[in-house]
Length: 141
Image (tube, rainbow, N blue to C red):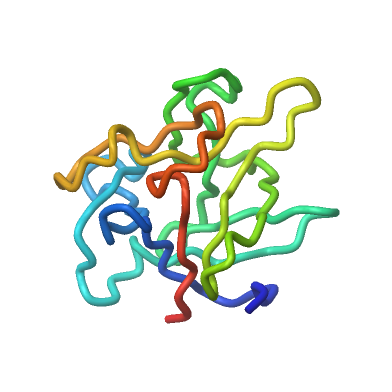
């Protein structure tokens, strides 16, 4: 399965089955959270951007980006007005991808911190490890 431009997806972590969630308390924090059954704060519209993808929240229209728009290992992922372009690499499981920032010298992967299943777990970018907490399933809404 490849993503479809303009389609909304729930993005599910392979290690925990928690989803990429935009906090309703501040509309900035992006975190791992249990699936709430289809609320728009957990839906992300995939948009083609050159050779990659950007993801826009279905409720707010804000993009998945980096805290302070600064790329470094362990940087938190947040929502903002300026999108980050992500590369998706299929992992073998249908609809599952490693999502990375394709930086020239050191790519960084979208990472559920510590494979923690708790609601509110930080989502960061980190050195690619191939571990399941860096594998994400895209499920249509």
